[in-house]
Length: 297
Image 1 (tube, helix red, strand yellow):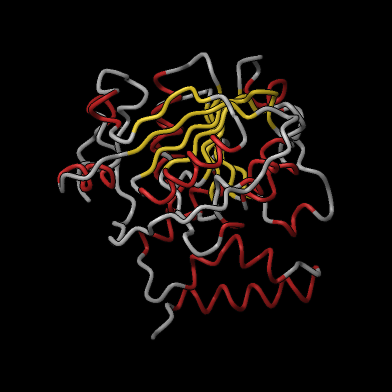
Image 2 (cartoon, rainbow, N blue to C red; image 1 turned 180 degrees about the vertical axis):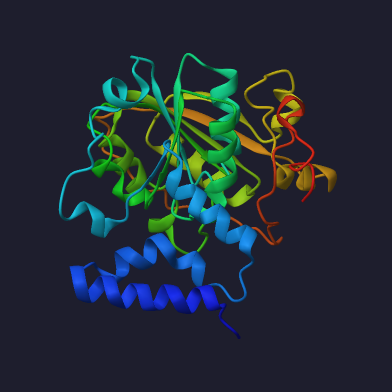
C-alpha cells in the first residue's frame, strides 16, 4: 500500500501541531483521516477541504467537547435556523439524501443530518448549500454524543434510515432500548421515531421493542412502496433502496412515539437473522432531485 505525497505532508503537519500547540492527535486525525487513504486524487482532497468551509457543516469529535460546550446546544432555533420550527434529525445520514429531501419537501421544519464519516456527508452538504436551503445542517460526530449537541426537548423527530442492523450487538443497534433512552435526553415528549430499513431482522426486532413497551405506533408496513406509494416523504428513495426493489425485496417502515416515562424493557425473542449481503449506500432516486452527476453510481 502506498500513501500519497499529500498524506506524508499531513503527517508532518500533525507532528507540528501536536508539538507546538498540544493539539490532540485523535482530534486532528478525526478531521483529516480521509487524507491518509492511499493515492487519493486531487478531486477528493478538494472535497474534504470544501467540507471544512461549508457554513452549515459542524465537525465535533469527542475530544473537541472536552474544552468547551458546543455553542449551539439549546440555541439551534435562535442562533442557526432563526425560527421556531421543529428540529428533525437523520441519524447515520450517509450522503444526506433524506436530510436534503425532507428539507426540500418541508420548509416548515429544520433538518440536521448526523454521521461520523465526513466523506459521505460531503454530497448532501454541497447540495444543501447549492440549493440555498436555510433549514438544513450537518453534524459530523458520534450519535452517542447527541446530548452534547442538543438540550433536553430540543429535538421533535428522528429518522433512522437504513442503519446497520447490528444482529450480534444489541447495544449498538440504533433502535435498541439503550439508544431510545439516549434519544430521550434530547427529544420532546412523544417525539416521533421513524425507521426505514431493508432488514427483516431489524424491522422485526424494533416492532417487538415497540410492542413490549406499549409505545404508540403511528405507521407500520413491511412493504412501504406498496402501501404508501403516494406519500411524497416516504418516496424519497436512494439508489441503495432501488437495488433491493429491483430484486423483488421490500422496504420496511415503522414509526412510533417515544414518551419520556415508560421504563423500557429489552425484548427477549429469537429473530431469524438476515442472510443476504447489503449493498453500499447509493444516490437518491427522487426525480425532482436527480441531477446528471447523481444518476451515476
